Image (cartoon, rainbow, N blue to C red; front, side):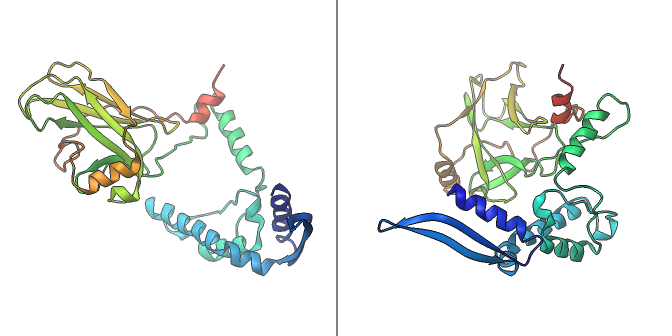
Length: 291
């Protein structure tokens, strides 16, 4: 399989410069104790047909990014392509058509990422330099009864991200609260990715609604999620752990049936706690700043 993969890779690269490429792999397979070679010709037209949906998806992502920032293609001054596949003529055609201008050839596509990292590393010791701001690729939130999804941290939130809300008990003498955490952009949990189940144990026994817990979602520069809890009556922190006893399928099935995994944690009128936001420090800064 590795020989087939390597031959396909060579043909793909060759088709950036030629209209067809021969793929020949000796003894590619055995059938009835007989060895057979692979000897075919791949054309650029065929490769375009095979990869058209991938190129179109790239342009869809470009459109999503522009809409998220409130920009249009007319606001883009220059388009820089990154990666060897960007040499493919069809990519250039699609990019030129989408942005209304040809991609820049001022940066080598195989060196663009390394050059960017070098510029960032060089600027770390300067007061004014390159600033790298990472964002959440999708929303992170909790599952609600009925299979609904309530975002806590929105998509494209700048990292590090921090948000908190209050959670109240729904029954007398409740000593435990459980939440399911998902990430995704759908309002249905079945279409999102299950991250885990958060169980808050050891709550003091009080009448319903008199005990509140401050739940904090925090995502650091490395996109690692940390959820903490603090009981607000005594100010004592509550132990919080991620449970693996539920599989994603089981969790989604129970939510769809309307079982209550959490109380009013993500209701529309849940107040947010004022929290001081941390400064933006990219993971690359941490990497290059290490002694």
